[in-house]
Image 1 (cartoon, one colour):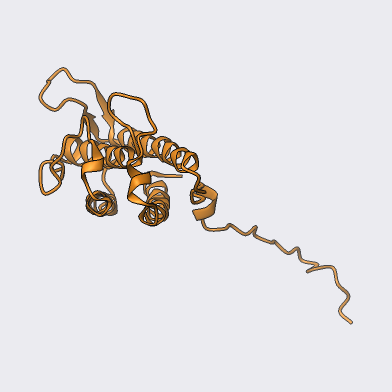
Image 2 (image 1 turned 90 degrees about the vertical axis):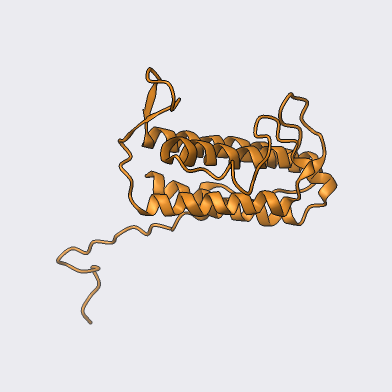
Length: 184
């Protein structure tokens, strides 16, 4: 499996999740089910996942993120209940579109990426490692969102990888004797 294939899966699973969340009542999306400093509800987690992709892929790796543009918000403490779900999803679609376009250019996944751009002594990772970090981060928080959906009494969509992969059929190799059937 490679980054482009896995990101394609994530984009498809994300679309299923977003369509499901559109059908939930706003009060469920804003329900404070998590006792923490930063994230309290489904919309907080959803916005956080988008922020992480925008920040690491576009701000850090590419130098041109959306977080400071039309989608201004406090990414440290999102308090996402103040935003309509549509606004969050529009931000997510914009980030996803930019990530897909970036991956279509077949970037050098071995490129070294500095984790702190203005620190000459900053640690580096490869673009491949950074992309896998972003993608596994999303999977973890998507599982949290699915759990919150269950706690609210709903059945979340099935987002497992195997639901989205193309089926592979085994290759059948015939010997010189064919299928072993009589010619009659």
